[in-house]
Amino acid sequence: MKLLSFKIDGRASFGAIVDEKIVDLGRKFAGRFVDLVDVLKAGALPDVEAALTGATGDYAQSDVEFLPVIPNPPKIICIGVNYDSHRTEIGRDPSLKPMVFARFATSQVGHLQPMILPPESPTFDYEGEIAVIIGKAGRRISQEKSWEYIAGYAPYNDGSIRDWQRHTPQWGPGKNWHLTGGFGPWMTTRGEIADNQDLHLLTRLNGMEVQNAKSSEMIFSIPYLIEYCSTFIPLEPGDVIVTGTPGGVGVRREPKLFMKDGDIVEVEITQIGVLRNPIKAEVV
Image (cartoon, rainbow, N blue to C red; front, top):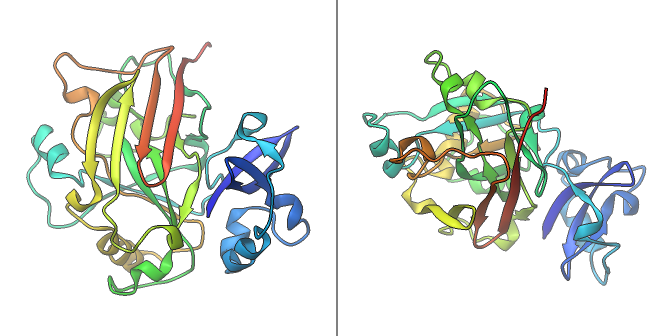
């Protein structure tokens, strides 16, 4: 299944893609589930799949405003420097453990929604990543059992304000500017992606390919990240683990390649879909 969150006529809902159209699951499950987090908490993905049997789309994709796949995740856990190509380009020594930082839900935008360039900085950089959405609660999850806790996968753009990221060793300010992180267009559920499948990640800026990698190139694998993160904090349905970006970021190019007003940035996972966002300068 391809599951998404969206808004139509001012009403927030969630749905599924069927024949390139959107089935409004918020209406089908009115009174039972408010959003995708509710669905995941109830372990109701099989119910959703059953409801889609014979279903036809309610809306064209162009009819709706895409929201972040999970607009209200309990946690967004981001992993830094998780591809050797990125580690090498930034000149960082190998790490024995993952670099972990947090994003906040209000920093996210959905597919086709503008990522906002603030007036305080011209150093707005792209970071194409693979997001893992957690489907059930767990603590101290072993790598062997980790796949059972995955609801699905989605493209993510960990948009970063580089100068603010480097104000201190803590990256929080540069990673949490309002409306700078793209998440979408939908998540493809685990049943559509083989466990340990080699996912192909690409980022394009104005049609030019700037990042190209596979999940097999991660330093710390998805099962390892689930094991590691669930050791220090319980994972909950709807949590998002953003697994790191490969080499090719704009700040390490010569000349530097930062996003500017009017640009279009795309993050594609070939087995899932393309997250596309325009860049818009904030007017204050």
